[in-house]
Image (cartoon, rainbow, N blue to C red; front, side, top):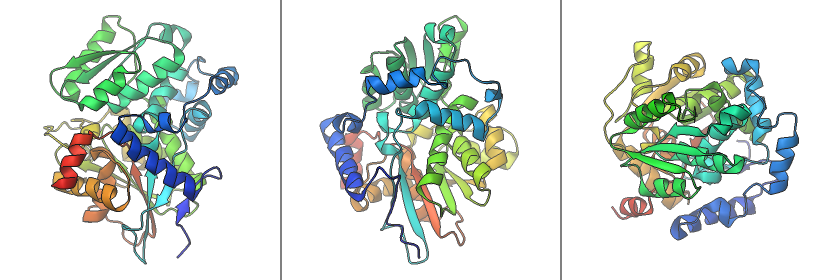
Length: 383
């Protein structure tokens, strides 16, 4: 078997990963963002250089933004250079066997604690000056909210963010800390989405969708682009699925470069909207039950994302709430990785055998975020 104990870009090392994981754990305990502890924020010089580049934020979205393509993902990568971190890809010894190597792509170590910064920043960067000057508006269960809030602060623009009132308190407070306006909505994500869209329709600002926009998907797709530079030996990638923006972008990036890589999605069986929609051959809403995986708690896939998933994804499967809980605990105890429920679904799929990996020898589990409430994590660890 190929030596795959640590896959990385040239700037990362084993010591770097050990330090990064320690920083994430310390940040969770101290209530401080890991990228702030490690000094990962983009410098003023980096932001200035980005503004002066040919792909500088502020230019109108290119003509090819009316579809998702490798070209659009490449532009997103240019925009995110110096902004988003190329997070580590590491082998998970307790998940690997002699026949199969399982690797973890740790977007839980990304700025804001999840992959969502990528899509939010990319779309805001591609807005016109007039669109940004109007302020931005979004809805989120917490992670996209933080991505939009971070980008709004960097661009110096107003942001109004609608969040379900029962979202994890840590995510709500982290969003407020960026200096944006947070409006709590009674109900679930879909109620928050409806209020955000109504606010935009009344002239409240420019809407930044959490997933159903090609620019957002392109930003998320930069993860797939980076994976191709981190390892040249990937057989399958497992991705959490909510609205479909993450898996759509990652699948497009990987499949257009190497169609032989299998792409599998995972949802909680409490909200299996993409699984049900693919089986039906059309977008289908489901009853959204409570889930540990609040970050993928979406009752109906997006229109654009559904088409992209139909085109590029090999299958979407479900895991139980118990399997998600066990995966969170496994990652914390055995791999020393802090993952929220949505991020742990991919490992839940491997542990439970929910995804038919067949003879895939090198498998990547995307850990999409680490913004789990510390009290909830403690409850799971002692249960």
